[in-house]
Image (cartoon, rainbow, N blue to C red; front, side, top):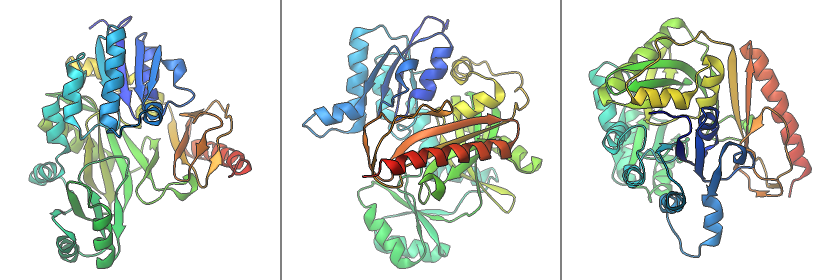
Amino acid sequence: MDEKGSTVLVLGFNARPIAASAKRLGLNVLVVDYWGDADIYKYADKVLVVSELLKETKIEKKHTNLFLELAQELKEKNQIDFILIGSGFDDQPQMWESLNKMAPVIGNNPKTLRKSRDKMKVYSEAKRLAIPCPNSIIAKDSEDAKEAAKLMGLPVIVRPTKGGGGHGIHLAKNLKDAEKIFQLLSNQRKIMIQEYVKGIDASCSLLSSGKSALAVSVNEQLIGIPELGAKEFIYCGNVVPLTAKKQICDKIKVCSETLCKLLNLEGSNGIDFVIHKDEPYLMEINPRFQGTLECVEMVTGLNMVEAHIKACQGILPKKITPNKGYAVKNILYAKHDFVMPEITIPEVCDITKPRTIVKKGTAICTIQILESSKSNALVKSKRISEQIYQQFRKNKI
């Protein structure tokens, strides 16, 4: 495929990072994004926004259907050569099937998607390969959930089997919590009671060809950081690369590459772990571009869209360039309701449009920093986040 000059359709709840990488590659970029943040427009030739359509329509529709409607609208007016899919659709293979009818989706096929997102089957395969993972039971009702919690030993995680970004994942400290959380999640098709593995949250970013795989980086995940306005298990950023013992990072790479080959994953993929007592436990597989995309690009010098396309063609990098430093990503969440001010700080992206009324708990913007040392990157990101939160306090409702 000759990418330069081709037209790509990018879909995602936050499509900006993929669109930016595609634009740097010389592609014509069409985007269907959920939020329509202020800075996405400079990376795309056309942007359609799902949240704006939600405000206009009087009929309740699933987000998936709205994404497909807007994708079809772009398809009717443009020649689309291929499609790239970001976060938010890991558990919706039927959407990938619909998009494939509009233009080729570059990445995993729906069958692979189903395999990689079936946590119970993936855990079973992982255990067969001696890859540690948390004990997990699918609960049929609240009594079942309490019995599973007793069996595993409290505290336990209660979570839907589907979803991402940490949403819907809760810690049950006692049996009453387990019952209450199960009932809270009762609209979900399947609910899992899972052993609580406490430790360092990590991930591995990989490039896969279906038959072979290459670990690009091992990353620290930032989960539920109160200073960033995040609660429980909500994803709020990364530090790339992970600072850990070499043998731990090597084990994560080997396990991740093994799983990628086992599942025949293609393109850019991510695998999440928790490191408990120097042992990495498999958490889940993200069979698409990850939130670490730009941090990995900063540290390695790769263009991840280009690397993704080549991997799907069977071409993996011969080697990964040594680390160029440390990249830190912080996603800031609203700590109270406020009116969004204008933010013009160079290191800040995914910026909510000015004058928007922002509700507590909503993702507002992202800080991304590259420095020669981890400590410098963390200090700088903290300084910027404090500066931004000060602006928010001034606009508090």
